[in-house]
Image (cartoon, rainbow, N blue to C red):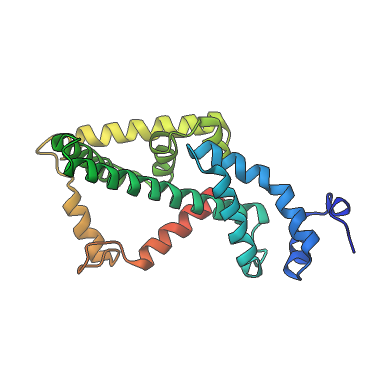
Length: 231
């Protein structure tokens, strides 16, 4: 039986093929090789629970390894799983934060006007992000929402830190120009309105008219695009 140390220098494709065949040593070798990468990425994007995220990522890897068809690199596939888990954790953090605020509002511990202001800010931000292309949204989200270090964000997008900063600068410039010259959220009387975009999305079939939410198909399309962008 091949020992893990002997597998240390095996290329990913061979380890994956062996792991898909049930070789436990190959599975252990992949985990040992990529656990530091996943943990480092989780720590850079999350305030806490990086260890839990890392554990969950490799659980997903083991459960779905048979679905990996090797059309992309194992690193790209692993990165997509990692980012999906991080995004889910971020969403859960925001949900928990919202529940805590709601509880405090009921108890009178938080000013309701402050809560309305926070909700309005999220609404404005979501509206403004609609006015950026996918690449620009990603750099804004990683930098300004996830508060990622620029070096870590650049690594996540597989570009140089200098290139990331240039993209971020252009995205912020375009966002500022759009909001000042076209966005009705910022200057009343400007032509671009979120409800107009919603009507366009309805016509395109991207939004369910009954629920007002993006369709599963559209979410899947956007998710696939983001994964390709990140990969």
